[in-house]
Length: 289
Image 1 (cartoon, rainbow, N blue to C red):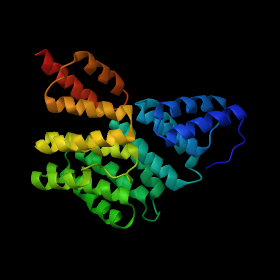
Image 2: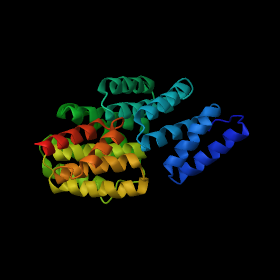
Image 3: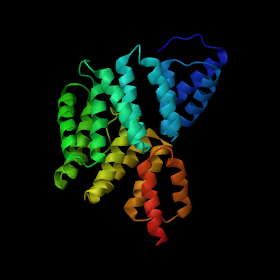
């Protein structure tokens, strides 16, 4: 972590923010980080944690802005860390429905990794590229990314291995091999996604599996994965992912029974999850018929 000369008040805010962060009190951590940031520059690790708390609370635009500050501060001194943050930013922008900006960040990550040895960062970037292919139902591009990701996951990082397992299931579903896809996703997602996967990536994995499963005939397996996500939400304790989980539960049940709650969910997720917002709009349309 960077060493900075901090004013006493900033030190107090940062101490509060760090303590709350490690006990997963995201709201208290976020509030203290906001106060510390208003006093002066924070260490890079603190800024990174600030971005994560904003994302877990559903402040998508602010989380991306903070992550870009992390990227800007690390791009000249730590290319691998900057590449990882660029991959995170690609995931964030795609989740929020901005595919063009997401592609730009993925391209920045690729450039930073050119000539670098194989690392977990490359695995997370491959996941980002594979998800973009899945969004387009491009089975060939997805299979190509998955082959490379499988090779990396065997040697590099257990978190990447989990992502590879999920993508293998998604690829099978898109390819029409529903039984294979459900089997692979059952293994990867139940009883709950492994703790070795960072929170923002874990949330994205569930979003991907639930969306593709619903679109490609996974049937009751979607309910199993949704139950797994509910358990994961209890562990992570993120208001944003609880809201996303609730949206997918509403879809599974057919329509929102409480129009006011559906409108609240839409407001909560408007800046975070474009797919969830679209689902809510579709459900509202069905309810109005």
